[in-house]
Every structure is written in structure tokens, then in C-alpha cells.
Image (cartoon, rainbow, N blue to C red; front, side):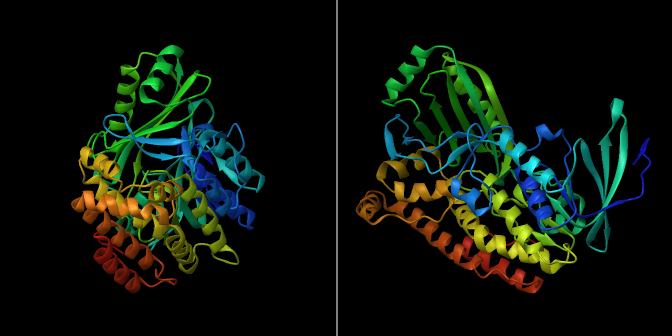
Length: 468
């Protein structure tokens, strides 16, 4: 490196990962553990990388990624009773135990970063990607701006065989690499959700107790309202048994309100004077479309939100990003050129067949629900067309499978609301067809086959494929 903005000779790595949040730090560590020389680049301070909130992750996803299960305090919460409420605050659906754990992402990121460094990764914090240089369509060098001592900036150039974009929705590498930008268009507002999560102090325990009493609820339960601000919107409340704090989560589509998540959360807190100041807070714009049809390119791969790997039904992407990191690292084993298209395509195919199939299926459901009015969503609950057997798999990020004893309730719900049953049944049929199609995602580099896949995807899911 040299001061004053003049670039030094490129430093060489096998792999450069851009973004040191959960997906990026996991990928860097896993790839390094497989024998590659890896640099992990983060625009912010390392402690500020990734999400700063509590994220719900099914524990099985850590195991699928080959990672140890979180323990307290990284594990903020285990499974708790969950109740979905209707417009009149009457319980419409109950899960005795949520199949998700609340994970403190700050601590998870720290664990993954430390694991990456232990595997030999070079972590460059305060280092921003400014330019991607390509040979043909393949990125070969990146130019970075790094904060130095006394605020002086330095230019750093890194050369690598493979560049991994784990920089989140902004897609720092994706947007600066023309071939990838063409194939992976930035999600529009209709495919983005505004979300906010906070843990706040409780300043009046009696006020909190009266709130629970009015709802017939008890501490430690998750209370969920859906459809308050259109089809794809939610509000989640949990009061700690000690009555010292409250967990809040809100979200709605950006096309409804670009700041809807934070605004809705603040409005709830303001309406309940027993809620005090935030103890932990986070907010983000999250992509909720299906994963990009292509995640691997010559010399580049996309993981996490940069590849739109968040789960469309509820916008959680941590688990999928961790699994993607493992699949990418596995695809590079034995490769003399980790950026060879055969290797990055193998990663893309593995992810699409394992997780993309489920995410794309729930993208069908998300788009169906998103088009409903709030009262229509609540009607689905009231007539019994949403059951624990369909809700629990959605929280687990698995395909829905009603339990046999729920079938009479579903039949009864269909009889009470044929229009809703037709809508819901049609969505389920498209979900199953989409899931089946992804199991035939082309395994080897073949753009013609991928275009054919995209055309068939448009027919079965109602949404055409990405440009390739």
C-alpha cells in the first residue's frame, strides 16, 4: 500500500470476500479451512459488520452449515409459545413452541470473524470497494479505499481468482461487475421489505402486565399480528418474564412505506407509555424475492442478501447465508482455479437445488399474500386455512405439509370461504411445481439450459426468470 491515494502493486489472494457479516465471515473461514488464501474485506469497522439485531434462525440451519449451535448470550432466545392474533386481538392460531431461536447477530458475527482469522483469513476492516477490473467478463482485480492512521486514506489493490460478494442488498461487487449486474437486477420496491427490531426497557411493569391481561397472554409468549399494513406486514411483541424488557419486530413492504418498519415500531412504542428506551436496535431494507437464478460466474459468486438468499415468507436470511457459505466452500475443494466457472456454477446448482427450491416456492406464497388487503389476510386465519401444520414449516424454512388431523379443519375452512380456498390452493399448487422444477436446475455451465429453466419458471411460478 502507498499513502495519498496512489495504488501499490496488487496483493494476491486465492479468494477475496467482500462483506464481513454472517455470510461473508462464514464463507471466508470455511474457504480458508479448505486450503485457500483468503482476504475478507469490510467497509465498516469489524464490530459494525452485518446485522446489529436479533434474528430468528431455525437451529437446524446451523447444523446444515456445519457450525456449532449458538449458546447464550449469542443465543438470545430459544423456542417460545407463539400466538397469531386477529383484528380484534383474539387468538386465531397457536404454536406451543416456535421452531426458531433468536440469535444476537453481533455475537454471531464476532464468532465467525474470529473463526475466519483462526483459519488464516486476512481481515481488512474500514476498507471500501471502489472499482472492479475485469478481463472479458471475469473480475480479476479490485481497487479498495482503506482508512489509515490519522484519517488518511490509502488505495489497495487485490488480485484473486475468485471474488465473493457478501456485501448485502447493495451488492458492492455485483453492481460494479457488468456481466453480473445484467444477470442480477437490483430488486425493485415490490421485492423489498422495511424491517425494524428492538429490545426496549419496560418502565412500568404494571402497565406491561395490564397489556398482557387485556390480550389473555402471558410473559414470554410471542404475539404476532399479520396484515396490519397490507398483505405482507407483521408486528411481533414479546415481554420478558422479568418484565424488564420487551422484544419488538415490525415489517412491511417498501412499496407501502420505505420507512414502514421503523415507523411502525416507533408508533407502537409511543402508543404504550410503559415502553421505555431501546437497549438494542436494528433496521434494514431486506430483499424478499427468490434467489437470483444465477449465483456463480467466472471469477465471482454471490451469497447472502447480495444473492437474494433471504427467505421470502418472513425475510430472515442468516441461516441461508450460512448454508450458502458451506456449499460454496465445498464446491471449491480440489480446484486449482477457485474462480473457474465449473466451480462457481457447481455452487449455484447446489444452493438452488437445496435451498433455492424452497425459497422460490415461498416467493410464490409471498407474492400471493402481498397482493391481499389486511382484512383478507386475517380472514385466512379466521376461516382456518392457515394451520400450525402449514405455519410451522414456514417458520422452519421448509416446505408446507399439513398434518392429517388438520385436514378436516382445512376442508371446513374451504367450505366457509371458497374464494380464499381457491386463492390459497392455487398458490400451493404453484409452490409445489416451482419446488419440483428447481430440483432440475442445470448442474453444469449451460446458459441455454438456464434460459430454458427461466422460461419454465415463469410458467409454473408466475414470475419469469432473470436475464442470463
